[in-house]
Image (cartoon, rainbow, N blue to C red; front, side, top):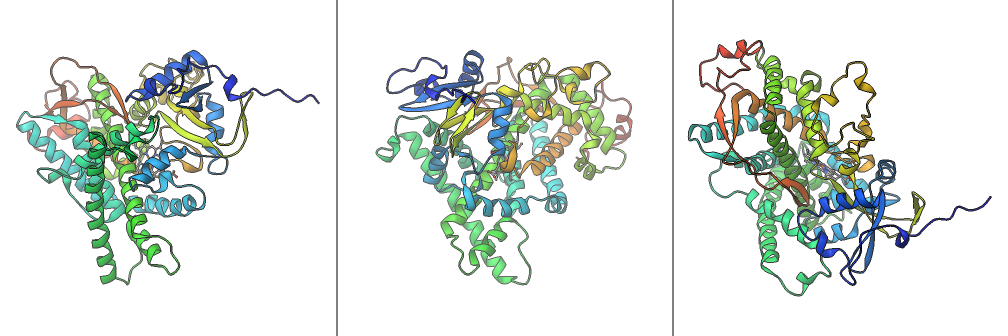
Length: 494
Ligand code: HEM
């Protein structure tokens, strides 16, 4: 049988590559993901780019992406540069771990974020959501604008720390500077370091590098205190087993023969905090942005939430997606168009074939997850915002392409995000509270909200005015009558 001729990555199509620097300048900014997606449109499902002297392959074919994600950790790993950059600043945990180390860490994280843990955590999530509500009520009373991304990162840090570390920083009700002001500098600081000709910061620290150093130090100090306090608490109550991620880590570290150092503890803990914080806060921010853009959808979600919560004030029902079909459809559609991880940087661990090209071991890859999910062949009207597509379709419409397996906002395969259940619970709690209690108003002239990559994709600016919900609003019909009985201006219980 004649052997099929495979091409090499250097034979793949791709944009003109300037000598020495390759495409570094085109990809150095905070919108490199858009450049890659534009090139995918032009050069097809598999194309090459260069960063300095190294060649990378960019994949946007869904089936190939699926296979890559499924074949981790054996055949593909995260790009070594990503791991190096995180390790260098002392923040390397499950996200950047590989091989056996990854397997061990994964077990601990998955257990810490299990459904049972989440069910027990529900009362704390409710309390934290009520704090966010009070914060927004205060802003509404004073007609102050709200920086949505900042407030939501306060929320997600409070939630992640309570669930994963068993401490309650209550940054939502802490005036003045809080840990988020440091955390928010880490993403942009790292992003700058992904596309450089060489790691210049090892020779000279520019102002953004010094800002990154300061932010990392500050986070490290806060996490150190948490680790120390937890250690002391555990020593005082040695009679019960670990109840959260940090306690589980400390238990492992104390085990004879464990090679988990104090630096590892800090590194793993800080990375979990980052992984749970930015992603969920910015996903929620994108959702809020779309709620402002589509007021009819906002009203529809509100009716749905009213119908669910008003009769029994049962936020606990939020755990069951089935009760909020349109809210979930809306969130899916936002995550399809605005996933916080629109692409992933990976690396082949063995020779492999992709679409007739031999990809040698060690080849660096970008997989374009968002691009695949916006293609006409997978989702009809792929670049249009249409939450209805996620609801059961009337006969006829269901025939349009709707390939849910291409939708991967949480990744896929063995490394799929272990925090997705927590994230969806947070999102439902915040959205239900928001729709039930506030009207949204954008501020000033319509400014286009732009995508900005800072490890995760976030809105560059999202300031809104929140007003306490007006009971005369046009949607105050049907199920709303139940809530209209509550005194005007009084807060609804989420
Ligand atoms: C809407 C919110 C979130 C989104 C969109 C998101 C998205 C992702 C994505 C795309 C990945 C990479 C998956 C892959 O490689 O296939 C990931 C990994 C990860 N996420 Fe999330 N995430 C979210 C929330 C969370 C939360 C709340 C936590 C924990 C508190 C978390 C912890 C992690 C960890 C530890 C990993 C690394 C998993 C591994 O490599 O095995 N994430 N997430």
